[in-house]
Amino acid sequence: MQEESMQWLPALLAFISATLSCEGVDAAVIRLKNGNTLYGDIEEVSEQQVAVDIAGVGRLFLERREISSIEEESSAEGREEVVSPHSAEDHGLQLRKKAETRETVGLEISETIDQSYSGKYAQHRTYTAVLKSINAIREKAVATIQRRTGLGYPTTADIRLRFADYDGEERLTADTVSETTNGRTIQVITIYMELLITRQTDVQATTTHEFIHAFMRAQMGKKYQALPKWLREAIAVWGADQLEDKTWAVLGNAIFSGKPPFSTINGLESSHHDTSDYMEDALLFEFIVRRGNGMTRVKSAIEAIVAGNDYRETLQEATNSRSWTKLQDDLRAFSLGYVEDVLSRASYSRFQTTDDLLKARRYQEAIAKFQEWMQDNPRSFLIPEAWYRIAQCQYRLKRYEDASKSYQIILDDFPQHEHLQDDAQYMLAKSFEHLKERTKTEHAYRTLLRDYPYTAKDRLDDARSFLDNPRRDAQP
Ligand SMILES: [Zn+2]
Image (cartoon, rainbow, N blue to C red):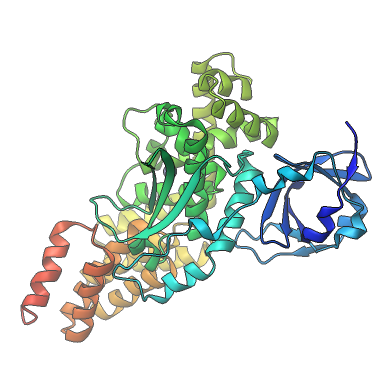
């Protein structure tokens, strides 16, 4: 193919930044002066050169020495680095295909953000702040998806991002549905406000996750819904880089509700599927990577699934498995090992021994032991669980002032441990009620009713009953 030097590009190019992963450069973000952004895969060409492959446009060649200055980016993930901006002229940029097609990969970002939300948090500063940074969030989401799944922004479909107040039964962070009007299909992503306002939702991760559902649904149509739910969630959770968060959530929730943590590994195809399966789902792709097949295999497997190939055959091939049964067996062993490792790093067995003291109602001792455990394991994902146990002990000992402080710590410092939040908010109100702190109690119950409407009905009734009758005697 004839190599063409693109005259248009230097004029459009604002700067180039490349996103580096731990293994090295594998995805590039190219921002154009017209506000559009191109995303590409970085390929090794030679010791001197790398090529950026941009879907629909062609390949952009960069000299390796020209991307030598690397700056730390203070990103949330903390392990991405950004190559500092260069002017296009310095690069001698070359593209293989014609420039006319470039518009198709551009993102018309502002068009698809629905700013018509007028619910109970319309004036809330968290919502205003999210709106301000939504374009950056979307850009980063698209780059993460490209890097981890190979999926590109679909040029044939519209995606709309909207905000809404909770109106269902379940606690829901966000969801994605297709809407068709006048023959035009739109993927509508809804982010629910309650979990956003209380900081339980990680907006970046959630947007990325829902984009993956939307991208795949836009490309596959009805075939997407025909894929098993565990596979759809496996790709979304893994692609949005949420394995660690989901591990904490799933294991934390199991431990919180007294289930053995290993019971969370119950097979990909277990009959009932819900959010407690997300860790196991995503471990499928971690398994592909750790088997030494790397990100390339992950991307080609996802590409094959999107193209409509049989998902079992595709996944068998990606993991070099003899059969579907063998793959599931090996994955189960891998997942159990993963959980074992996570629990041992979190010092779970000592946590459990201490928890037995609570169960035996030896509250004083339990508090002391949990405090010791926290000092020895400051980075354990079970720290908020320990705070919750301490708060429970203090509450049972009628040390309501201390209990209220402990519940407040869970709300302030660990919002993303979501299974604890509504419980902590309710127990905070109960603690204030026992202390006969009328204003604080009213405020805490109002907050429960406004921000945690999905919590147990008897708690909501209790809150309403207090607000109707603030002089009632505190219930245990
Ligand atoms: Zn999902």
